[in-house]
Amino acid sequence: MQRTLIDKIWDAHVVRDLGDGWVLLHIDRILLHDLSGPGALQDVKARGLKVRNRELVIATPDHAVSSAPGRTGETFAQGARLWAGLKTLSQEAGIRLFDLGQDGQGIVHVMGPELGLVLPGTTLICGDSHTCTNGGLGALAFGVGTSESVHALATQTMRQRKPKRMRIRIDGELGHGVSAKDVILHVIGALGTAAGVEHAIEYSGSTIRSMPIEGRLTICNLSVELGAKSGLIAADDTTFEYIAGRQFAPEGAKFDAAVKHWRTLVSDDDAKFDREVAIDARTIAPTITWGTSPQHAIAIDGRIPDLASEVTSAGRESLVAALEYMGLQPGQPIAGTKIDWVFIGSCTNSRISDLRDAAAIARNRHVADNVTAWVVPGSLRVKRQAEAEGLDRVFIDAGFEWREPGCSMCVAANGERVPPGARAVSTTNRNFVGRQGPRARTHLASPAMAVAAAISGSISDVRRI
Image (cartoon, rainbow, N blue to C red; front, side):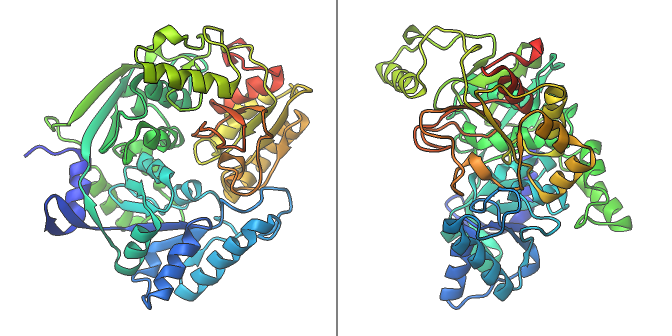
């Protein structure tokens, strides 16, 4: 029987068939952060249970801690309790915590891959919807709720129903100024946010194969914005080179044996998927969102949709609501729209390659007078690497604020928000109503596009800079 990559990972982790399509699935890694981790650990403790395999659990504060320079866990007062709770409960349970200021700390979906905690063929969960990011390394990773986290912490298993299999094949060479973020925004804009519901998505094709790992992580990060449970990319030589030598990766003969196994984790030639989509990469331009859903994505040289583009009354009502919230007019070019804020960061685009791309545009230029711009590295290691390369000086000299690692303004859980009514270009993954603060207006874009907007004071085509 020909099997997909998803089938192979799933089948290898089934502990027991529970019947009616449900199985007990072994979980290889559990990641915890300060927003959902303390509640899960407290629940385990309150039930008189213990963390079954503490060596397979890693914790770090990221969501509710300040990103201000010189911050501590108490800088954001409302998040101090969560930070302290994660610290205390992790220590009690014997879980390794990468705390603020400690090598390895960072956004949970940035530090996991960079430490070598995420490996091809593993199953991984976290109380965060963007856990699918980790699929860029060939892992089957997905977000879970608190009750599921508790079950996994206590048993190292979860009751799960196997998702349907979907493959999105992207082929062709990307054009000038087009990044992984543009690719996945284009895909969501073309397919819609319900395309992957009940599915795990495998991304394949020459475009994906030519991407470095950090680009693949960006692709998989937004799988949940397609409605999917997981997104993953089969491991290859690029993956193995990325993993080799990382802190928690196998070494020596164990690494060689692991690579031999990882090479088998690919979809068989005649494997059947429940849905397949093909996309020509040559049709993708630098892309940005205009509305209040990731599927409201258009090319930078495109126009905001008009009401005639929606054939249903519900669609037109949704379009009108998005336009009203964003303060935009239908049929107008998106380029040239004035902005107030730029945010570069989040588990989508805060890795060293993202900062290099952003700095390349920012170098010898300056943020427009009407714009406030932040750069928030994804981890302490990213921050230190960027500073070693002088990228922090590039940003500071250009008028950006250089901050400490964390989720920051992505979800605004730490009090860092876009002001009401202000318009932001953001490298994050969601442009929902109020996501970056009450009445904040968010346009999703790549790091390079975000810098282009910052220096021009309006949404701009990075290819013209």
